Amino acid sequence: MLQFDILTTDASSHARRGQLTLNHGVVQTPIFMPVGTYGTVKGVMPQSLHDMGAQIILGNTFHLWMRPGLDVMQSFGGLHGFEQWHKPILTDSGGFQVWSLGAMRKITEEGVTFASPVNGDKLFMSPEVSMQIQTTLNSDIVMQLDECTPYETKGHLTTEAEARKSMEMSLRWAVRSKNEIERLQNPNALFGIVQGGMYLNLREESLQRLVEMDFPGYAIGGVSVGEPKDEMLSIMAHTPHRLPAHKPRYLMGVGTPEDLVEGVACGVDMFDCVMPTRNARNGTLFTRFGDLKIRNARHKTDHQPLDTTCTCHACAGAAGVSWDEGGRGGFSRAYLHHLDRCGEMLGPMLTTIHNLHYYLNLMREVREALEAGRFSAFRAQFKADRARGV
Image (cartoon, rainbow, N blue to C red; front, side):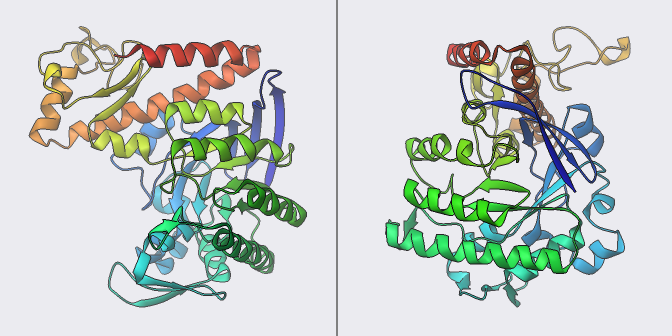
């Protein structure tokens, strides 16, 4: 089941405000989707995700197939019951993970043969197998199996001929994915994925042929795979608004706060990226006024919260409200710096909460700006604030 309603559009860009109805709930768009590769957003309880405004999260077909396996998933009725997240879930097809195995995998027309990174077993994934796994996971949004076209191939930039060969196989795999999901009578929504590397003519061809297949939604893949930022931005400016206006558009694996706001302006409805969680674990925090590296020595004695405008669990009340006074508490930069230096697990838990809250709150502000007809002004203020620096 998928229903997508456009609530308002922006006159100065391709941005739009929408509502996506799925089997496990309603998602307000534009939206950022936290990544939960192994059935968990690292270090964050489901209740915390709910409290910070997460509406839909990701799971990964490849990794969940490896561990805990489909027999376990089936016994729980799918991923929702297993990880105790009862809102919508989107699952990646496993194509990117297979691509990232490099020499450990062999791609043919039939699918991909590879050695399990867990125990070395020889495994095979095809469009049909990916659809079968995702049906067992019972994710609300299912992704077709595609080949992630690399930016470089064997030490040289991927040529147009190489990108075309990859794109055309992904299109054939799209047909097989669609046929299998229909054979399985899977009631969830299958998205097709636009490929074509950095070649706009191939992107256009991929897009048109996928639209002819009439998927419930569409994704833009093959970006953030090592290409220069300007080339990624070129794909982002070219592709989303050319997809059907009445269907959701998903930009896969992107990106920075700036990428999200510009992506919305280009017509994107849905985003995911490991950046807020991975960067949090590595000590880089996103704030309204730029990025902050908590490992820097200058934070050792700093009583300020990460972001004075932030209401997340890590920031709120850091300037003087204690837990026993019934306040929400909060933590100073000095304390988070100390936790990071000591390797205490509370440190990355709090910084992950902060970064995810920042991303989700940014999307909430984008939606509010679109509703109020002031997205252009919001976009300009956002850029000015982020450039100001912490």
